[in-house]
Amino acid sequence: MTRLSVNVNKVAVLRNSRGGREPDVLAAARACLAAGAHGITVHPRPDRRHIVAEDLPPLAAATAGYGVELNIEGNPFAPPRPGYPGLLALCGQVRPAQVTLVPDSDGQLTSDHGFALEGDLQALADQVAGFRALGCRVSLFVDAGNPRVERVAEVGAQRIEIYTGPYAVAHAAGDARAALAACADTARRAQAAGLGVNAGHDLSQANLGQFLAAVPGIEEVSIGHALVGEALYAGLDATVRAYLGILGRTG
Image 1 (tube, one colour):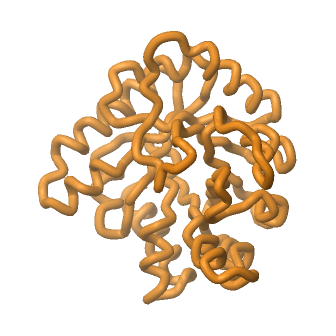
Image 2 (tube, one colour):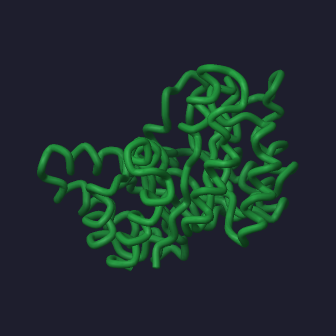
């Protein structure tokens, strides 16, 4: 069955908007894990606008206590600065099971494109090697339909994460056939190259089932924005269990 990793960034956004510790990111993560989530995802950005470095050790301890994975997302090329020692240094502190590398710029609102995988990829391969030396499984964020997805294996990463934002937009517009075909083709090509396949961005209860039915072999979905928004009405426990129900029906 596809695993659910809950991204708790949006809980941190709400906390940081007011200052202090509420809502408590660790408590939210524990609530998701108690409901059966298979992991927790975070994306500590250099501008510290949501998850911050200090959040990572307790989240790592919580996921370890439940025997599930912590997934840390980030741009490996973003330089260190006060309050942000760099992605590799952060991962060195907590040794997450998985690190998902994204090509985000510093001021980017959200991850909205994958690596192009063009030209000389030695610098990216060097970054991947650094994370693998920490014992992390490395996943690269890629666009559906990227014609060079096989190059992810060349740089030493073990998985891709398909950027599903365009699929979510197409689903909301009423015709997701082309977007699903692109996602499915990308998944198959990655798997043929020996890569595992994750997916994430704007997946929700409304569109997750159709995505999983059409795209083969998804190992993990990372869901945060929609899940936290839905939980405002139904609560984290009920919302996580609803997602697990969808995964169970399509797994």
